[in-house]
Length: 81
Image 1 (cartoon, rainbow, N blue to C red):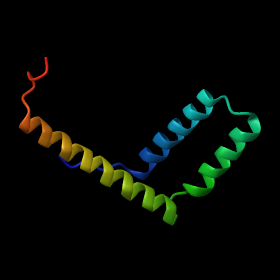
Image 2: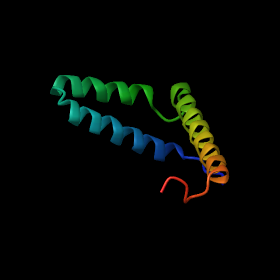
Image 3: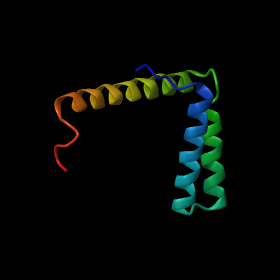
């Protein structure tokens, strides 16, 4: 199975994760604004930082999927129930 995330999918996922972390950490308005500026400056479409982020995210996802496929082959579903 070959799955790759699109740029806009990763921007949305990262925004959701950062926003949730900010909510749970109960950041002040000043800190929340600083975090939003960081995210906006580092993760713009077409920048080197963003392209590197997309590449690494897709590589990590592919590696995780390969590991899961291997472990399913070695271990039957009923083991451990």
